[in-house]
Image 1 (cartoon, rainbow, N blue to C red):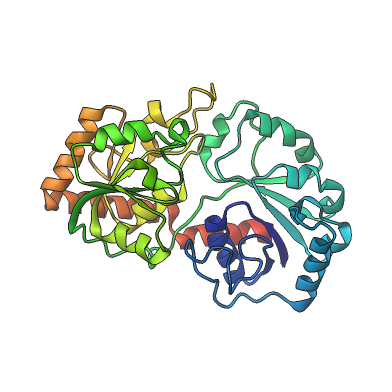
Image 2: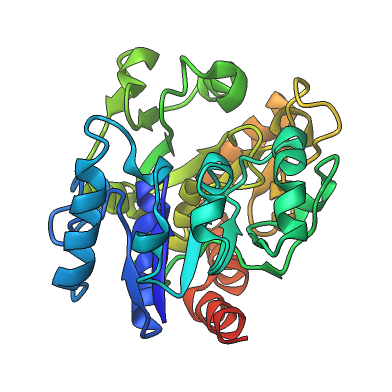
Length: 343
């Protein structure tokens, strides 16, 4: 199958394009991986080994892009370009469906959600579902979106247990990864994170995390991200509104670093009324495979236990990693994509 994969998130693009390629499909992704051997930001994720686009599709894409210099060519798909493909997968951005519908509707079109849909977006795409648009959801919590327009499959994000493993926790420190956490405080719960972790050794990683102060470490290479997850003792997860979960949560949980996470009160956005989408409290059983709460004292107690007792930390690590593989493990997700695309 020839798949046109339209991406707005380079890290998810890296994961899903690799998976589709491994399933034997000919995938073309004109996003961060428009050149698979030379991605747009190689520090976030590396090149995709073995993925090579045909000269024909590259020529067709460059000809299309040349018609719209300085603009996002994914907004201007033509029927002639789309005719090369069997299936179009659109990652989240609704305008890539609405602006291109006349050029893509004769193909199988799949809207792949990523935790950013709200009621207005569901309403915007309602008529396209009636015309054949299929939907792959990323979390069952999206069924709580007011005006929810359904799903054809539920396929979560994934991580490979062989890539995220070997946690040691030798560094008695709390860490977290986020983008613009301080400037996006309302969406990312920076204030709650800062207040809860203040008594402990801590480090925040990610773009513009330096704004947090001397404990902000900035953006780091992918290899260091994996190393930090392996060697630090606690991962504090703050969520990102309106997402049910995010890739950094999966990467941490899969690696085995014990998770301490905000609860439903902070995880759900009061500025999206009725959108109860935050899923972590239903994934983490407090004190068993992680800690989850909206109470600072309760979270600090969990952190103290993890920092002070390596045996408890190892128990939480083992239970967390087992849960992560069960929910987000690559093999099960791969089989789900295969079944869906083959039908």
